[in-house]
Structure formats: C-alpha cells, structure tokens
Image (cartoon, rainbow, N blue to C red; front, side, top):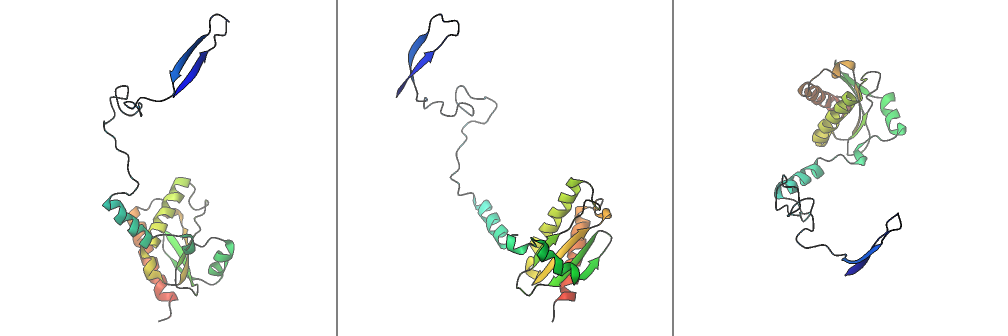
Length: 182
C-alpha cells in the first residue's frame, strides 16, 4: 500500500512530494522493544501471552474465587451499618473494636469504619483496611451469617501485621461464639 507524503515548507521555497509506503517492515514491527533499532538493554525475544495464564496463575485464580470478597459480602450503605451499630455484640482490644450482629443470611458481611480521627495518615488507614479485608476473606467460611463492623484505634498504627492478624483472629472467634445460636 502506498501513500503520498507532502512536505510543506513554511518559507514557501520548494515543496517535496514522495510516494511512501504506509506498511511497516516485518523485521521491526515493535521497534521500541526489540529488533535492530530496539533498545539493546531490553531482553530479546519477548513473546506475547495468549491470555490463558500459567498453571500457577490458574491455581491462584481459583483460590481467589473460593476466598473472594464480592460486593455481596460487604456492608455498602448506611442502612446496612445502622442495625449493627444499634444492636451489636462488641469485642475490643487495644488495637481494634469489632461489632457483630446476626444478619439472618447464610453469608457473613464486612463493613469498615476506620476513622481519620483515630488513624490520621491515609496510608496507615489503607494498610489496616487491607489487613482486615484479607483476614475476613480468609476466614469467611467460618463466620456464618454475621454482619461485622471493624473500627481501628490509634494504637493499630504502630502494630505489626502479625499482631493485627492475631487480634482479628481472636475477634472473629469471640464474635462467632457470642452471636451464633448453638
């Protein structure tokens, strides 16, 4: 395929016209990544993936699906939070306060109330939220039909990951014992 390339010179001198191919050479279809004009510091022979993933990725995907955290397992609206705040069993330690209430369903749900007053730095708030979501996601099959709200205290900022995981594990166990009728 051929295209016409016109060079217009602003001073009005000579204008040049030339037929130029609009197709790329096969040898340098991705010249920024590899080939004769590519970056020599980059590895050669990069292959495109088929989108299927490796065996390890498939195993990870199925584990995430099994222990996922879909919207149905979240307290999304103030109407979801209000009954838990009004009639909840409370479990507290120096790092976290966990409120729980039976929801009448088969699945547990989680709400996070990590306030800026208690945890001022946004990165610390996000770290605590990630830890709580991860712990909930991994323990959701043992938590039954309960709604949980987790609130952080100021001392949670200095607590290590392991301390917060242990604290959450104790809270989950305490709340399941208190709230579930056996």
